[in-house]
Image (tube, rainbow, N blue to C red; front, top):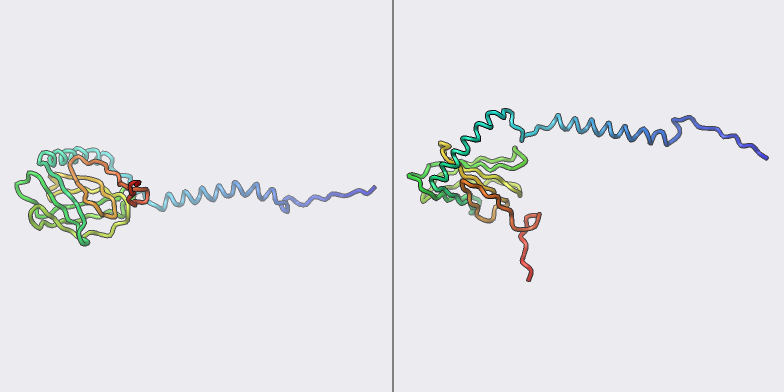
Length: 185
């Protein structure tokens, strides 16, 4: 009968202690990385002064009421790289210039503000900026900010979009990638 002598290795030469210590170490590294990302990137959707924003809502509602009283409706469409806006309503005179803000819902840095110039018969023109595909919130105001029209458009900008004083959320007709679906035959 032979006796085997079992010699144990030091703990640091065994794989299991290292494996068990690596799990909490990975969690700590992931937590520190998350904290670093949170501090380095700004949250553009948070407003600094909530009180002033709350007061501004009343002014916005008054501008919507003014547009509704004038019966204003605007139609946006793209023609040869230009943005064409047709404004209709009970205006005494058409403003020489309108401001259209195209706001991306999640990336404030992608927002565009366009100055539309009057070309006659209720039509306004501006160069259409390059916009990534997706949903955009549009807001149209006159130079005095007396009224406001709003709506939602989807790029690529292929179909006309109507802006009104009572915005209706319009969902694109198509699949999730923006392609138009064909009816089954």
